Length: 115
Image 1 (cartoon, rainbow, N blue to C red):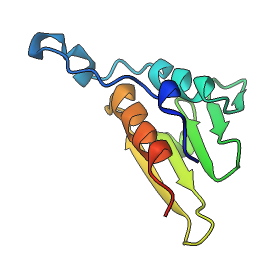
Image 2 (cartoon, rainbow, N blue to C red; image 1 turned 120 degrees about the horizontal axis):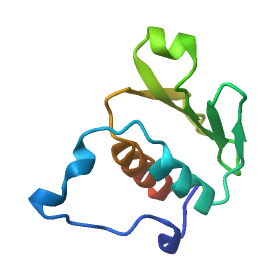
Image 3 (cartoon, helix red, strand yellow; image 1 turned 90 degrees about the horizontal axis):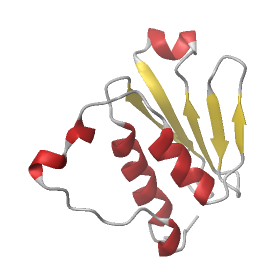
Image 4 (tube, rainbow, N blue to C red; image 1 turned 180 degrees about the horizontal axis):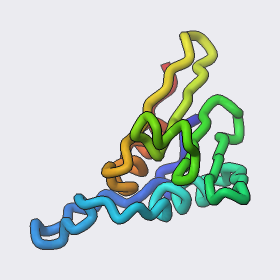
């Protein structure tokens, strides 16, 4: 699951006045651009949900703006990880979490060194 550094987002240190991304705009583009750039297959549903899976099948990312079950739990992003040598785990992000923060989480997850 290691990604070449050329495919990961560049480290940016915005000036304080440039941190408008800290407020969610409910746009999935930062995450979808990252995953698309890494070659992850993406499936759009007629309901406007998007599902992405890593090429090795061990990481799933769901953008779920129209999933009733997700909305009942107050989430819009679901990340599910199936490690080869550990228990699966899930991380969910709420509707007010900026997509840039989710993209940062995923970039760190994907670039984490193999144990």
